[in-house]
Length: 172
Image (tube, rainbow, N blue to C red):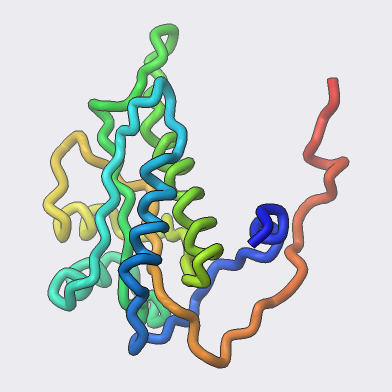
């Protein structure tokens, strides 16, 4: 898909067909898009955890209570490693959140390009997710996304509602 069409037409999918798995080669290309994402000082302070097994899906689904989320055949968790991220010397800013957000953006756009539905979720219960994944202290999750094919009756909404260009862009 042409890039500008991709970013204009991408939608958050909240309607997954639980009976259709995503092909492994598509999942690999989606994960590769995250792997090659840019990061501060090229530290790449992340891991991508793809949950597809039924027992792990059941555990992960407890961190966010929406039926549509529970029907996706895969859940991707971008795990940031704070101890590996670049830190700005002047004020101690740690880039892990920015870096994982960039990687997640690559992943979501790659999923759209592959015809795979995704929806960036930040409203999960971090304590339940931390427990389910047995995360270390230095590991943090800023977003998760289900991955799957939309139900056959899914129809794109069309034009996105966004602020006008003149309201968000400043030329100085």
